[in-house]
Length: 514
Ligand code: XMP
Image (cartoon, rainbow, N blue to C red; front, side):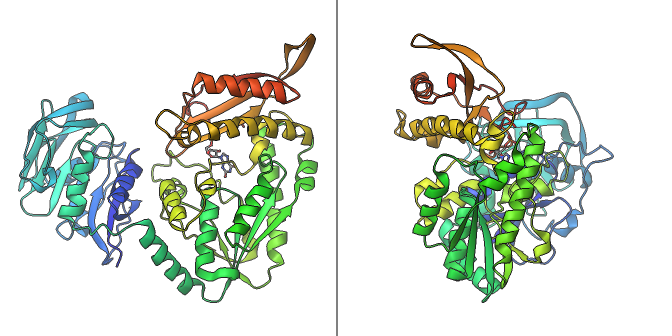
């Protein structure tokens, strides 16, 4: 049986990070809303309570009945989790004199306690709270303090309970990984058997059981998630999987052909549909970004539906939904919800059941699973690309000519990025989360080429670093790389006479321009 750690989410920004850290310990975990602890799940081996934007004294604070798991499983409370356990157990939580925020060093730490095994005496930790625990519940004792925080960590004499007011999941808590390992492996007894190989074995077996002899339809986009989903399903049910790949005409240069070939090389049963005429016709004259997105979404569903209806015996619709998509949709505070890009308007009337085999994976795990399945790097390491494609990277209305110009500029940019190897031997492309060119077709500027005056469009280059696309920083690309790309684009792409580099972070900008 797959062992699992349950992480109860009280709305902290870093809950996902706790999940990632646990997975990095090759241990399966589920992040659930704070009030959704699963009763009677024999695979649970431990429980972690996350931080929260609320104070325990806030009337709106999230409350949970601790008796569901306290004493039954090892429990680790983090920040709000620690304060909530102290508060409900008869301890005292008060507003700190000054907000305890940022780096701190442990002044006392009980390295005999299993939670702190291997810790340095003055280990650096990261604090982020307005309240502090001034009195511990009966039966609890402090196991670490900092100069300012007496009860930086505590443990119970009665229950398998540990709690820390700092954040072990963030990078700035230098021995945070050690702490989580102590909890997950030593205290909870994880056998660390969660790996891409075990995931593939288990999932293929489960898919075979779930799908039997049914036929499944999958929409492929060329992106990592849907591609890995396709190969995994293909392993389980072979030709009973039919994939549909729609070309809306706004993919990258030659992408449709290249991706089709890659899919066929992987043995996938894939139908390619060139629907570009329809998309260009429906987008003619449309300049508003949201309008463009709506039209593309609607047309996509129409085209996909028409194709899918031809497969009359299909019972299932598979999707490459991954864990962050689901967590965002489940988010309990409502602050981080964003529309679920990948679903893109599910054809509801098709009456198909949903199959989402990657729904528990983080992006990097999807890549590891893809590698395990023997997929080529050019599919696995691909940057994310928006469903509406270059349409959201062309300002103003969209024409075939503008798409062609942008495809040329984008191709030069990306090919150069793939070819550029950094000092540490890694490709520049692999250091970047996502890169692409944007055609500023509503803008013109004057230039000179030879003896000729030009009056043409600029291209903006965008490249960002990120871990989940929720926040992103602009990538500090090397100047020599930018110089080469700029020269090549201006010299080779007719219609472009200027190249700019976008140095905006998200937030407040977004990754895509539209
Ligand atoms: P933004 O522009 O919101 O983008 O910062 C965040 C991430 O989502 C991608 N993106 C999309 N992906 N369909 C998709 O499948 C879409 O409509 C869509 N819009 C944006 C974007 O490329 C980035 O990775």
